[in-house]
Length: 605
Image 1 (cartoon, one colour):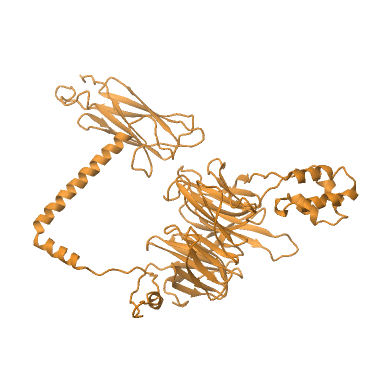
Image 2 (spheres, helix red, strand yellow):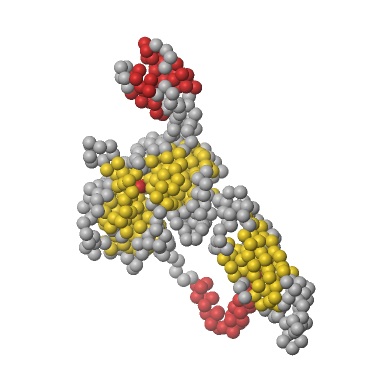
């Protein structure tokens, strides 16, 4: 390849390269139009014009061309794309964190605004602001000296501003802000998403916010209510600078937070108070919590790439050639690996698999922001933004391979006794075929008939176990109310009308929740074909709102003997059943499985 790497294909720009000034946290990929085409969304931050205030614009790219722009009311700290419900067709919501608020956009139009809760102010600060408007101006200095005794981070914004003013400017400021509330509101510094239940395609996600006061908030997606509140550290103000999370909200999740003073804290769902696991003397430039081995990766300003366990033990570290600017995880499910891309000062981008460097390419400028994922119709696209604002796009080749260098592996496998290098080209040693395997293969050739018979016995046993498990799953769901706690509780009732041979089966589905919406539900009817004929056995239900029952009907026709127009003799009270199963998309076990006893059909003369 022209750029020296065989694993990545460079995308050439047909038109002029778009200029973009952004960060990794201000870039995301989203299907904003709901047409299946993944678009790039990025906040273009303008800081060059000194005559105007800094501004930002949300730009939407289709491919490599700008298709839409949305002015933002401030400088964002992060942008995320998330789904808030399971209704079809799914449309994502774009969340933009600005100052103390999160702005939500749907179809790129304002949808909702959430503001983080205010914190309680110090009693001394409240007392000072009560006295400042009514006392003489010569006593202001004594009151302001008492404010200086409070931690600067715990003061309200107007108190911080008052302390910065000169003595001549203070009376006018006090007169203007005498009636404003003395509230301390934090600023959102980090925002990310955590999936609610599973890792299925496009599941609803919760929004996680980290503020400069050290608090961690989690919002549920439907009503944007606060469902989790944690704190990085209780005995000091640890301002978060980096955050990484793994897991799901309904089961369990783990949060790793890096602070500006170099401390790294661990929070869990069961423990909302941060636990310091290790502390570094140099500031961090990147932090990752890997999903598989649950190790913590950190890049620091002393040119080191380090890996720690959750208990704070240093597992390995790699000395880099220059300062790491940002790091990014690259999950490649088709290869079964997760790479870590590290952008270095000078334009080099290195790819690590555990401690081993498996790929590298060099650009002309330093990379400031990186984003990886599905873009357009390609699954594995790496987008890079340089310091000058140039956007570079690379696509992973389908025949790419990421393997450590042989000399790196050999250096790690130096023998302790004879100092000989052990050959190998993979991370894990693959054992050779043992004598036990060879003997087993020869035994199977000699006793082929017995081996085949044993295989058939095990195959039939497996089929019997699968059939029994299916029956048990249906029987365990025989109830009129669903017992799945991860979804909205649903009640099912049935009514049969008619005297036969044509019956009308009425089903009523009712959502018992007070705030959750039941969606993606399907009703399946099953009956013995010798006894009953059902024209429509499957029906997809619309979303069921709380308190509003949904009623539907099905036609069930009893099978009669063509000669005497009577029900067959095999039909009894025990087998005159129609099974009704209420299922949810993506689940093998029904939410509700009920058996409806059909009345005796009259003869059709």
